[in-house]
Image (cartoon, rainbow, N blue to C red):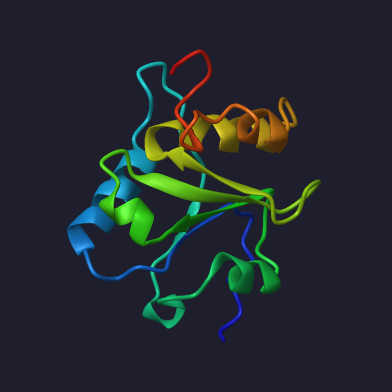
Length: 136
């Protein structure tokens, strides 16, 4: 398998290629600043060479940054675009789902060491998806 780009991360890796419109919606959502002006800094990997790759296989390629976001089949079919988020540091491999509109929060807070991965992972809703703090 091809090595992952070693930029500053985090990487948002597309592994599902059945729906271009959905991919563009996910990417557009992540790139759009919040009403308060917060924006996620991410590198997008849109390469069919990674089609069908698992999160564990991507993890073995030593991605850069503090976290890895995976756009898989579940992301594509989810109305909330629930990304698979994988910890690359303290609890390497720990994962949960997060709606795309909240990606900026984890990226911003991990990049400045303001919060830890577990604070997001431990705050998922009953269905295992993080939708923000104080929401249900």
